[in-house]
Length: 449
Ligand code: ATP
Ligand code: MG
Image (cartoon, rainbow, N blue to C red; front, side, top):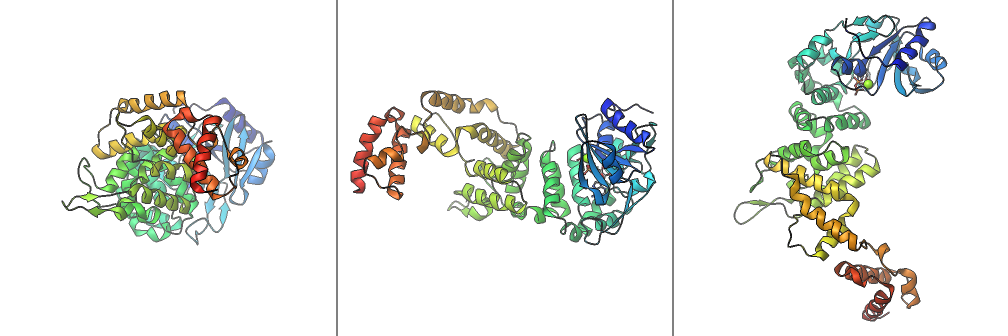
């Protein structure tokens, strides 16, 4: 039997179980990833000890789901999800077992798990490896295969079909034909899964090496319209010109082309969802999508809110989507570059450039030369070196100074400040209190205040 690279801290953790006369089996993703020679982050352990007992065995424990037998043990830098052997009861709502029955038999526990590759167990004390469902064989063949009858297993828990796609996408595996065929037959159960669980799997699909593969599986199995209907609406929306693909394939490919951060993957995936609504056929018969980015940004916000993404993610993804349409060339004057920065925020420049490259990849299917963006980068660096005044709060004078000139606080003051900013974006040299006060006096007269 091959030796697994078990960290010393995990061996120490396992010794606590041995001393208590209990078993500790490494299971789940950690074991799978070790067999595949991948880096492990989270550890899953199955034990015959009840959760209450585990909680007493260690000093730092999070009661993750005591009633389902799960506690999270924090031990010397490791996070170890520790679950009592169990047999799941009925999944009345297709979401989580109504009841769980605990068992003292690890083999019974392995039978309730979802896929063969997730049903191995490695005894941390004796080194015994259990693989009752042929998980290693499927890992070697690159197959995601449900344990037992896939329709039954997907009916029990509607999240499993989505997990099947997630694992296929993360590992670049195929889904066994029987398992794949069960997905369209159990969509009703999938539709009852909580949005948080769906979102977490979606994130893992999007962060996988080639998300387009997982996304295409979601479409082919019928799950996509329930997760992101606004994407399904992009199928068959043809584009012309440089574009080789319809809007949906373009979106999938753009997602592949984005760096593996969730904000960027989401922005690349959703940046064109406004196109079906924005599409207008020109007199030449060619479609145009004038100002689709605004519709895309609003649709993005709505979709991400529905999927309960954190507000910060929603804000930054919709901001990127709203501003993804720019085509810099050296005819842009300094004021144009400053206005672009004032609109988008210099802190978002690198993300916008990454989105630009992803979009270009999704258009042609070929990696664009990233050096194409260097001229804009240099330009921005140069301009920011000379002036960082890009918003009202950067102006040399503010509300207090205007009030001292006799401008009442309110909408007119806001408009004057906005005009001062426009002036400074045109010519940053004017951003001194003396010159701005002078200009403010003239604007004030124009407004008659
Ligand atoms: P990851 O690397 O994402 O953590 P994982 O396989 O460890 O992958 P977890 O969600 O941490 O996934 O679950 C740990 C184990 O619990 C799985 O390997 C599987 O054996 C079992 N499991 C998790 N979710 C389900 C489910 N919905 N149905 C059946 N078994 C499941
Ligand atoms: Mg895990």
